[in-house]
Image (tube, rainbow, N blue to C red; front, top):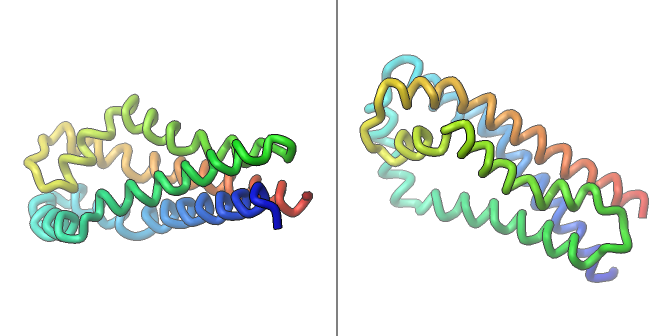
Length: 157
């Protein structure tokens, strides 16, 4: 098996993993977070989640998983310019698009404030509630599209 093919398989797997995580986020913990904000139980959420997040280094673990997907897709793209590119390009642009969407919508600050345990204003909580699930569902769709496209291109090789 060639190095470009192995990298493409790893990129498809990593991208599918992130897509699955994002789908499950929408169905489980993201829905729970939104429920807690909607029902005015922010302090209760923060009292339990923020220490767990710090103790498990969850922010670092999450960032590493996202970065591994990005780097794997970038390596696969660089290694296989002769093969179909669309899936790998989608895999490479997924993380930058997510980060830009987070920033442009103003979601970055309320999300970090909520999960870190810092006091959150009513306006920031409302922004979090309005954007949390729709943004993550959009990200899940994009990562799923990228992973599926990569797999289709691999099957055609």
